[in-house]
Length: 279
Image 1 (cartoon, rainbow, N blue to C red):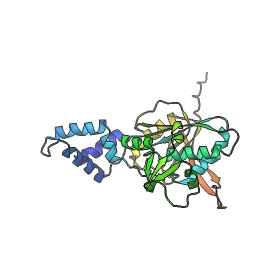
Image 2: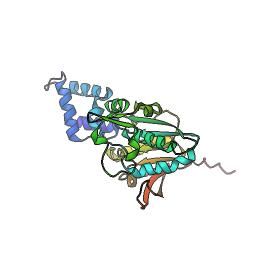
Image 3: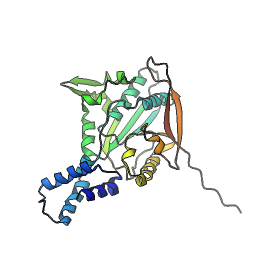
Image 4: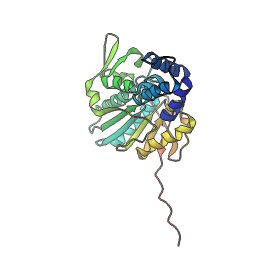
């Protein structure tokens, strides 16, 4: 059944399932009222249920994340915000896992708004295929691994919005009002208003190469022309898609460091109208 699980993960989620994770899902199915001597058809039927119910996503997806991970991307967001002063910015956190990225974005915008006269209004949509991870995101309760002592220059922004108690961190409710968490499969189109910026970081590597174009096309459909797509630092070189052109900026992160960092991202190219036939 493990091989069948991996094939279904490829077909339905587009991802390369870890064989150990697939084995754990198989054991879960067998331990839940499926006799190990059952026929293959019975086992396959139960496996279909595990995929349709969301159970398979809980076992097969990776939810490693933490606040202000890869800070150079948040420096890019900070650099982009002045163009939205006194207006609305729509941001998507795709494959958000347990939501640390979405809350980090909100913390940064709230911190920025305290420094200007005309605040940026914002809305964040954050989705993941793992329903259990999305429930954690909505609750906003995190363990200590999500706030790391790694010298991150944005870490100070968490202070007003993360309250510690009994080795847990609790998100301040004020951040939740501008974030919509929901379950969605990146292999499917998303019908929504278009976004100015999409964060899709450290998930692209888990997709099969022949499925990646599908994912990028679906993201391009919900990104405004001239919008920004941000992938993980290690993923940028693997992106080739007709709708996206790679760009970079040299930014100075906040704090005392005098150094500048190059940040790479993708710009959605304006779609050219079809050429008119010559007569």
